[in-house]
Length: 359
Image (cartoon, rainbow, N blue to C red; front, side, top):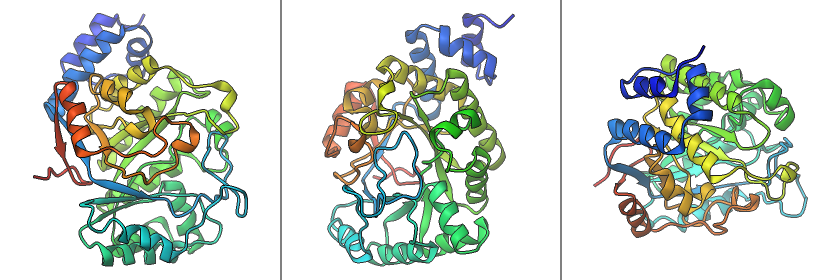
């Protein structure tokens, strides 16, 4: 017989590590208020009353993608209506437009392009760094990286070394989706395995490249699948220690092949955030990505263990707006971020990509 909720809660308060069975009990049976209380207590041990943000913008050089993931509203085939494939000059013009913005980070992701290779992207990074030397380049999902490195005929380590030498400092963490193979084969069969995703991030950590981690939830997976996913990330962090933050990504249902299943509730979002904080005792930060949740839910998330809300964004990403997120031109001012955190009784703190505090 499994432990009672009050016993599991006592374990959490004592700082003990939860196993899968305890996690399932707490996730499915604990009242929402208790999860919020426990996650807030754990968050305060890690970051006190701080909520982190940064000044950032996204570059999405292309949405042309070889893969056809059933949850994706962003992907287009080459030449299809709605496809874009910016030239190097157009990408650099977007950076130039933000040269005086005060941004400390550029987040670069896109489709798995059929012809752009590792050397194309290292050149892009090099030229971005020439334009804005102090800008941190956080770039590419593990899926993009594996493909471009494979096309170049290099090992993962060799490819990552070239990207690091070009100026890539961090990896954003997308493409993890759900690790369970029985779900992965249904929603993203072309994307490779969980083991490949974890191995690439582990290789990056060993090379001094920090990364984030994600989980796409709220579609056809179960709570057990979510727990398995999070515990695999925890095991990877035990081994290589390079994850800065975990970002639960809510499936958004507009304009994709899975739209008929709808979306999960805000209550489920909050339970997922809280349990992420409680299970990932070795990952410093839990991010409530406001572009995906919307600003109101992101504010609620601050009472359920989240201590990061991402950044200013500056209307530079289309991935979630194309899937039906409420902010169709996502931008958040520093003043808005501060007000949001203050309303939750917390303090907004600017950070860089590596969570060094600024100012």
